[in-house]
Amino acid sequence: KIKGSSPAFAVIKVGGEVVEYELETLVKTCSILHSMNLQPIVIHGGGPQMNDELKARGVEPNYIGGHRVTDEATLDVAKTIFTDLNNRVVDAFRKEGTKAKGFPSGIFNAVISNPDLGFVGEITSVNTSEVEDCLKSGSIPVLTSLGFDGESTLNINADVAAREMAIALKPARIVFTSAKGGWIDDDSNELVNAIDLMNEYDGLANRDYTGRQGTLLKLNEIKLLLDNLPQYSSVAITAADSILKELFTNSGGGTMFIKGEPINVFTSIGQLDLNHLKGLLGNRITDSYFENLQ
Image (cartoon, one colour):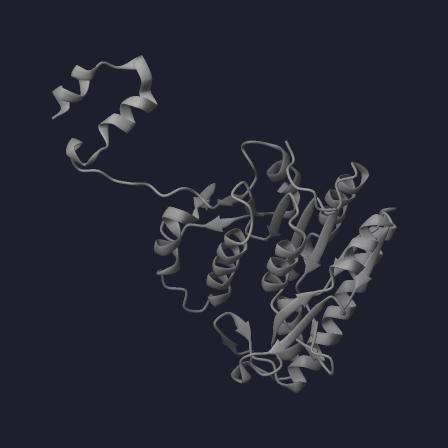
């Protein structure tokens, strides 16, 4: 059963690598959802494209906590890259015969909260009415993560923008597409099928993310997102060609993140509330069963 009353079925965050190498697959997948009247909202990044352009200009990218430090020159590159990519994604939908509308900016209101990051915005509100109007008109909204503070454009991490959009509209599904296809375990280098944040977050967050702070930022954004959504909500990281499998099958196609439930560990029978446990189990076991355990 698909839960939720949002006009959007799914918020799909698309990484820059997916736009560059898997755009056709993404568009076909979202078009299938659109044809089923399960409307997606697409929010895309552009990190790899920005890095290439900055490198061509001799500028070394700098990050703090997974956020790109954005001076005026970097902001100019961001505006150009994001607008070009937005047009590219919208054009791809239209070539597929699917109605889509681009929003290069104007959706995320933001302020500068950390001067050390330069022109990086912290989202204060989301202009959901424009997105909802787009959905009601039968078009797929295609958004960049650029924000606006009333005077100037601000750079915002696309994972952060996807989180705020999902919290604002509460869609049935939230998907982060990734070229890696999911969360890769550091030790085994294999894809993890599911992550229970209630019981696994601390262990994951305390690992060494040197040189890949964006991965830690994504983990934190997913936790913040689930903390602000109903208990039944889930977030997936998957490849563009596995979105439908992730959305509609039990096996999934990437990594499913859930809030989870706390696991209580007891080392002796005396720590248990036996009357409560007996009530839960009913007549399936006898009183002597517990006596034999003590």
